[in-house]
Image (cartoon, rainbow, N blue to C red):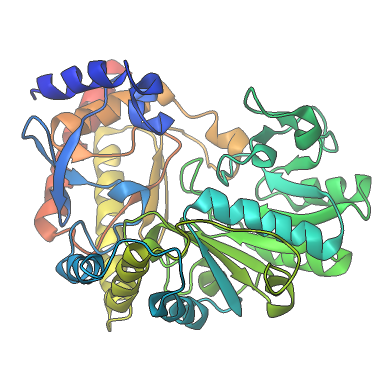
Length: 431
């Protein structure tokens, strides 16, 4: 596969953009390769600047559930653009998308639109702190909630140790309010609460972890968090930026039947345009300015192009049988890869919830960050490069989720299966 032009562009990009990319994982560093620069996409396919076409399982990291350049989404955005790209003033589109979100997500009574998932999680935490009058938050190792200072924190030594900044530039004074528990481990959460009695404002969690690979919650885990929060007066925040509208129309909370106090959304509700949202109980949301005193604002919040793309996307998702068809396609993809590994006698651990799936290069179950971190990342890099050479575009990291769209065809899935069989044969000879 030729990628001369991508290589030239990457060299040029590195002179004007730190690392040559505007989001770190795009640099392909963890898979021992260089990024491909994409020129265009349609349906399930992307084409790079060298003319190579790929079956895409990244989907812009989740938003493209209806495929790239869906005609209905393109038409909606085009119509909106002809009226103006941004006004900095309210539009009826904001109301319509808000009503659709509230109708879909059981826990949301009011919602505010923002421009990114990071904005959504940052704002939800501020709101929870104001509502409870407390400062500390609990997050989980391996769960990513954007790059706000208080969320770039990893666990210290010992269950009740205050967080340590995970990135230079994060003040220790910010980090000390962030406590880090183990995903799928209620005891680790209880220990933090016991050590910080009356100080914890909220627990924020990806109900389906998607940033250490796809890691589902164990039975009883989310229910346990809900009970702990009720007992201790703690706000439960579900970060459904990734899982919202992805695993079901009502998100993970519909799948598992657990109702959080606040929910953050993004990705799919913008139809591929920059967007985020947070919403929840009316009594909490009404603390936001201008109805309350908790300040949050954004020049492009509720942007008419993003609202139009989101409305068009959600209208497609509401079509009869959409999620059933997506479930069937996703099961075929996951099963094809698992069968390919089994045929080659190569050990993997696979997970899937709806159209989110992951192949862990591990002989053991993955249920938290500790077990995910034991994966053979070098083997994943070999697998990634072998699949890419066969025009299958996967996430350039072991610790990311793959996404299936409604646009993936039977032919795409068969090509993926064939590529996987070849990739695992290569792995048997190399690792």
